[in-house]
Amino acid sequence: GQSLEQPSEVTAVEGAIVQINCTYQTSGFYGLSWYQQHDGGAPTFLSYNGLDGLEETGRFSSFLSRSDSYGYLLLQELQMKDSASYFCAVRPNNDMRFGAGTRLTVKP
Amino acid sequence: NAGVTQTPKFQVLKTGQSMTLQCAQDMNHNSMYWYRQDPGMGLRLIYYSASEGTTDKGEVPNGYNVSRLNKREFSLRLESAAPSQTSVYFCASSEGGETQYFGPGTRLLVL
Image: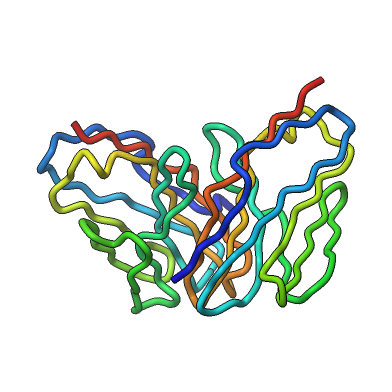
């Protein structure tokens, strides 16, 4: 089967750096994705790692280690608007599996 | 360019009633998905359609049926609603699978 583990909550202050970890177990693997969801809204795509290493998109970076079945999302220069839930997701085949999500609270 | 649209936005049903949730995308994507989201459980895949004419079960298909009407539209049907199906339902589409685009969601309450 498939399982993804990520912390349920993280709190940080404005301007800081926060890392959200994700470990996974899947029967197949095409890559690790990250999605952001604000309260009451729909998930939106943030980043994708198909190969090992770091991908950077502005203030957000994502890392993957396939040998460790592990990845993380790094958010730098935190802003209040970054308060949201963040989900890691894996694509075992043509489907998609999401983690339970990490609720990030950014405090002034 | 509307992206992914879902109707209705809100719905209240009584136990045993049936309904169909509609989803349409205008991005010419091959793949479409239906998820449900419950508090603290993230998104769980109900059914997906990798291409027009195909559908497959996801993690939680029991109590649901789907129809891929054409490349644009993918509907989700609840034949006999149960309180356990109270949830927020999201439709998504993608080309290649890595990036999924989500609709605004349908909030369903089954009494």
